[in-house]
Length: 227
Image 1 (tube, rainbow, N blue to C red):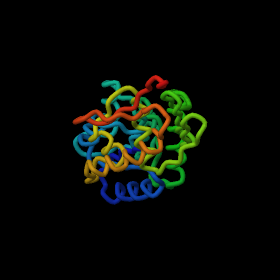
Image 2: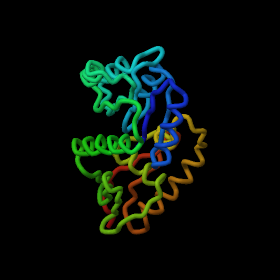
Image 3: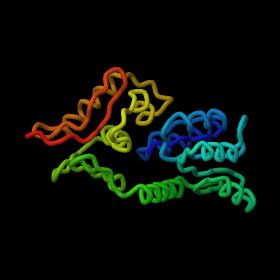
């Protein structure tokens, strides 16, 4: 998943970043509420992991504001505020789950998986463009009857494109969502991975689904079979 961690305590933020990255997720960190809100509104994340007591903007305020702007990214509040009123307030402002510190990474991972299952259930269990099917739950990808084997980066790129099928996804948006906004990734790295992905998704004899929009980015869209 693409995760936004909003945590002002540097040691805790680093612990979360390292632990979640080792589990295969892409993480972006914000050190205060205002920075977290700006990132939440500007980029697409699968889940926001949010502390409560932060400078500039509290976690409660940060959780409320995206909802008023119709940003529906799931939010998991992770905080030392463990009283019943704190938990009730967090749930009432729109967070999807609430965990208290100290915590175990195993429990955090389980809760993130639960949030993803609920999100997928609301969206439908699979994504499809023409004869290309991607199942986010199992990470299986099929082109026609054939199972396509993808690396983690290739899969993440394809998933981002398929969530926005028929729409152009900018190069910067792909880099930020797949590698993280705080990573210094060159555009030629993106192009290299897109070539690898195309070789697997658009083999000879199949209609081309992945398209380059010059000067902007990439898109995936269905096309009619050629005769």
